[in-house]
Amino acid sequence: VRSVTIAKSKETAYNKDKEGGAYPMQQEENYLAQTISQADIDARYDEGVKRLLANKSILAVIMKECVPEYRDCTTKDIAEKYIEGEPQIGAVGVNIDETNRVNPAIHGINTEDATLTEGTIRYDVRFYATAPSEDGLIGLILNVEAQNRYNAGYPLLKRAIYYCSRMISAQYGTEFTKGEYGKIKKVYSIWVCMNPPKERRNTITQYSIQEKHIIGEAVEQVQNYDLMSAVMICLGDEDDKNYGGLLKFLEVLLSEEKSPETKKEILETEFEVPMTQTLESEVRYMCNLSQGVAERAMEKGVAKGLQQGVAQGENRATLVAIQNLMKNANLTADKAMDMLGVAQADRAKYKEQLRS
Image 1 (cartoon, helix red, strand yellow):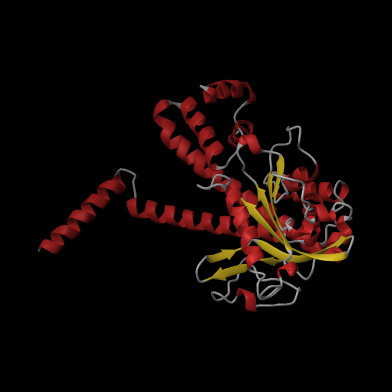
Image 2 (image 1 turned 120 degrees about the vertical axis):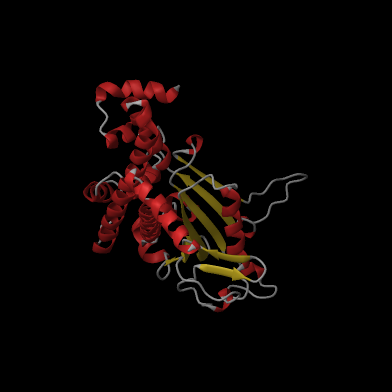
């Protein structure tokens, strides 16, 4: 009898919710489905960014700007002559402590670095390259990371330096053994930060080891200490004075607003990047995913804004919707109002309320 009473009690409560327009189970299922769908889009978007950055033509533009060894090289030569093998994207792992047994030859490189004591690192993109020097070709190991969140709860630069350190230590057993430290290859960890804080937007900063004379003027050969460099590329808006060159190249490539046709024209005409069938398909794929991300963000922001603002009138609801889009989709006020269809005559009013 008690079990029947409890069941009826639950049914009554559910029917009351149903009569009142609330469907707890259905709402929970819808929310879960939306969350899973969004997570799937986000995961595919992240993977798409990595695939774009792993394209040799794209890497060549980044390397020419950020790696001094290629300053006098053409992007065509970098892509065709100096990048060895195919850059690997960090999706597949290997067993712990097997990193140094994967492939001792300089053709391709595993994207996972694992040790029993230091844990596992999965690099977004990691690859070998050679570079011209006065003494002939030298070997380099490069890592490119796509970072959506600059403020991840720790200094991102420290993570970049840690990646450099791991790429050097992982060379033991493949590039050198025992006392052969002269064979250590220089490493680069290059980070493309898509949503940096305001003070870092449209900047490129390099951090490396340099010689500093404390007493006397003893001089060491640069190649003996210049073994690691971390480069932080922080993208920004088009109206910034520093916008151009590599910053414009990457902003166009990863933009969520520009069409595939616009991207293709800019990349080909301004940066001489050959738009192969593979690269063009990846750009289109990313644009489709970007549209999905934007639509999801808009739905989330509008829904949340309307829910919070309905009791306070249409003006408040629109203001909250703008704020949510700016926060959840990382949009500017103008772009958020574009997506919401806010009339031009009302925009100054909302901007004033956003500042207050």
